[in-house]
Image (tube, rainbow, N blue to C red):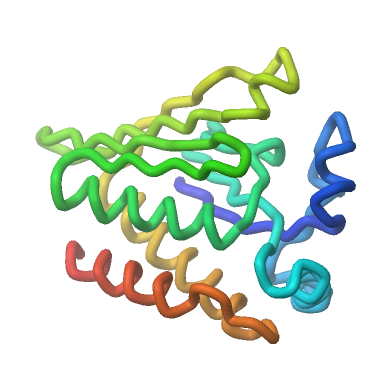
Length: 183
């Protein structure tokens, strides 16, 4: 089972940076009743430039990303969608996100049961905390990962469009539509 959940930080950038250990209670899922209010508050404070949070991805109870992989959620989603699109087009999808030096790579494995090998490089998190690996790699069934990225990307898009500043919604929507052509 693939699980992809988007969370919004309860705090702004400075509060997150200064906290040494991030946990579930520092974030709320975007389906939470106060997520829209927190999202709008962050966008207002940052003058529409940043919406901090994380995207937690797991497969069969193994985590690819965790709460320490926080950053601007728009950038995380755009990068995930672009990497998946490139992977399905060329066999390899690489995307990085520079603010916290995170990046990921997706490799398409052509086998009897097509799969995607995803490596998530944890960037600053692995430099800040000794117990965090430099990277985590998981193998996903291709169609299962694709369907979940489309579904959860669409959920994030709807959330993002509900905020006072819809940010890169048009780009996110275009990438989701491009991925649907691979189904």
